[in-house]
Every structure is written in structure tokens, then in C-alpha cells.
Image (cartoon, rainbow, N blue to C red):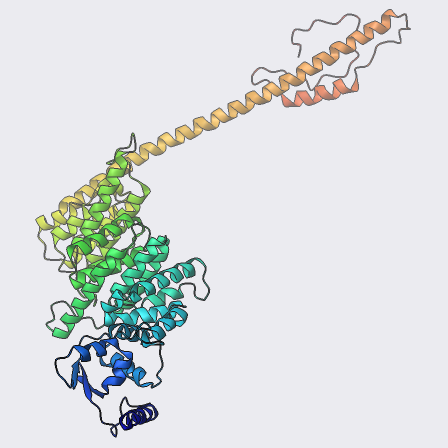
Length: 582
């Protein structure tokens, strides 16, 4: 009995004095719990009252008086065990979204369930998860992020899957029906996750039928945050980034981590080709080249750039070409593969169009890409390390018929010859072999004829074709003048014919009017009326004859009837006139 009173007294003292410490130095302990490098001096019967795991260890121990327990594999480590021990001693502590996952896993590991003891720690953490932790997107993301340190145990107790399910559901709802501003705020929430957890959320969103633009928005935000130094604002900036040749071990370790991250992000991309903007893809491909990512990663990015190359700009291609400091050329092979893949795709598309020859008829998309590539060549031609083979290798990828004019390509060739003044005549001819002097504008041909950097053969071609253009232009001008005169004469003839037809119609109406008038006059005479003498021509006939005389409907040999007077007309016996207007 005295021993029991002492135990109860000790428990009361521990409950009163252990709010900041798990045990009191005045109360002797009987067991040491070692959790990795941390030792806890505790009481066996207090731990055994809540933890079935500790009870089994004590019961199954071969020692009669067990004084040390090793728990090295508990989820959450010493921090989680300390809170579990506080719970056993009745010490209050706060359960938050940052520690609930570790506490729940530790409680399950220590078998602190309600089946063993009512109101145990596992039940408390489960209630917090259901009612608080998984009620909002922010709290669910925080819990999933905390699970990273307690894997795979957190996945075994279903904490990870529950978090992923809640996050994917709420993210899809926010994407379709935003509740906050800006509408894409939820992508920032997902960006704090590790790449494995993020991949699980993206997979769950796809299973829920999320739109590809929704998934792409989350991926862009996550990539910009995870590779902030490399991606930046998609413009290729990256101050302070060292070259891959630097031997700094810290830099190599960081680069390796970034490479693994990028190679894990790219497979998450949706299959739709229009999911990402071209500048983001070019910037990401530049990251892959810089980080020396796997061939599969780079080929996937190159394929996506190829599919929407019609939207590419010169700046986008330059991002792929130069190092982060902008001082040297980084890679040209990717640009060549992208352009070559685009041309092959266009050629394959043209095959299905009946009656279209790829070497003669080029789409507007092909022509737009050709102009962009020529401008791109003019930009990289200013770098001395660019060889002739690499320069020509990119220029010849574009079919010659796709260029409406070679002026941009001529500008690139001229810049290259200016930057490389030590080329001999044969090397200059190789550089200029990509040009078609027939496609140069008049201004470009004049410039080429005076350009001392060009080889003599190209200058002669420019002058020769210029003379041909002048001659063909003069003949064409003469033919155009003759055609214009004939067209004008034809229009005048058609107009005159139309006017004649209108006049003929008016004359026919007048003839019918005169005929009716004559019939009326004969009818009046036969009725026995007095002959009141010669009748004067009606005023209407007089006015109409004057108007018609002014029109002169006959082109040649017409008679002028404007001088005819309004003389009396003998209606009894009409005169026969040789030149009657009827």
C-alpha cells in the first residue's frame, strides 16, 4: 500500500512539474529510451500504460530488470518521440499541421491506439487530420510536405495518399472556380512540395480530368521556383552562374541536384503540343543543355519546340545558343535538330495535300520560320568561334524556295565575312554558296556589287542578274502600257455601245408615240369634223427631238437634226424621207 501511494504521488509530481521537461530530476527513473543519438530517462509503467510497443518490449525482454530500450527507427525521430512521451505523462503540447504527420506515424509505430487505451495519441492525431489538417489546400500541402522526412512510413499509414487526394481535388476546383485573387494562387501553394510529392499531385489531377492548361500552369510555376536561377524570367538571364567546366564540388553537387529535378519534371508534361509557350520551352531546353541532362530529356524538349516552331522568335533561338553570361556559343546541335525536324514535319504534311509540290509551294508557316532562321544567322554570325560548316549547316536546312527574298541571308553572310576577314577566296565562296543572287532585292544587289568582302564570282553574278532584271523589267513595262491602253479602249467601246442601245430604245418609244398620234388624227377627220387647218407638231415631240439631236448617237456619218424647225406636218399623206430617224 505504501508503495502504491508513493507511485501515485510521483505521478502527480510529474504531471505538475513536466510542462517544459519530460521528467523531473527529483523522481528516480527506471528506464532509458535511446532514440538515435538522444537518450530519454523515463518510467516504464507510464510508457507501458499508453504504448503497447513499449509493453511488448518490456514483456519480451530476457532481462529481469530492463533499464534501456533502443528505438532507432521511429518515424519523426527524437522530436516525435518526445511529444509522444509528453502525451504519456499528460503534458500538454500543440498539434499543428507541421507535426501532425510525424506524431500520427509515431503513435502508430508505438501502438498508441484507441484499441489499446481510450483517447490515445493515434486517435487524437487522426481527429486533427480529418477535422483540421485536410480541410484546406494550404494545410493539406503543409502536411504532405512534412511527410517527406518520414517516408515510407507516412505512405504505409495512408497519410500521403489522403493528402494527395485532397490537394488534387481542391486544386482542380480552384482552377475551374477561383475563390481568391490572383486566380492561379494555388500553383504557388503546390510549388513548395518536393518533386516526388508534386508528381503524385499532378498525376492525381490528370486522373480527375484536369485541363492540360491547368496542369501546364502548375508545372510552369513549380519549375520557375525550383530552378529559379536557371529559368528566371524566360529571357535566359542567370547572373553568377558558373560554367559546367568549373571544378567547385559544391557547384557540381548543386548542378547534379538541379539535373535530377529537371529530369523528373519533364515527364510530367501533358501531351498537348500547345500546353507551354515557346519561350518557356526554349529556356528549359537551355537548362537541360547547361546541366548536361539525359538525352531523353533533351530530345523531349526539342520535340516540343519543333511542334510549335512557327511561334519562335530570334530571341528564343538565341536563348538556346549562348551561355548564361552571353559571352560564348553554348550549343548549336539542338537548334539544327529542331529546324530539321520542323522542315521534315512540313514536308510530311505537304505529301497529304494533293497537287502540292513541297519544293515549289511552301506554307506561310514555313516562310515565317525561314525568315526567323535567317535573322538568327545574322545574330550568331558575329561570333568568331562560329565555323563555316556550322553556319552553312543551319542555312541549308531551310529549302531555298521557302525564302521570298535572300536579303536577310545576305546580311548574315556579310556579317560573317566582316567578322572573319582572314578567309581566302575559296572559303568565302563556301560561305556565299547558300545565297541565291536572283532573290536579292535591287538595293541588296547594288550593295553586293560594291561589297569588297564578297568573292569576285558573287559580285559578277549580282551585276549580271541585275542587268537581266533591268531588261526584263523594261520589256514588262512596255507590255504593261500596251495592255493598259487596250483595256482603256475596250472600256470606252463598251460604254459607247451601252449608250447607243439606250438611245435606240428611246427612239423606238418615240416612233410608237407618233404612230398612235397619226391614228387619232385620221379618226377625227373621218367623223365629219371641220378641217381647222394644219396641226402644229406637239410640244413633246419638239422637245424630245432637240434633246436627241444633242446626243448624236451615231459614231460616223450621222446627220445633225438640231436645225430642223417645228414646221407644220401634213398628216393626210406622209412624206417619204430617205434619211428618216425611224
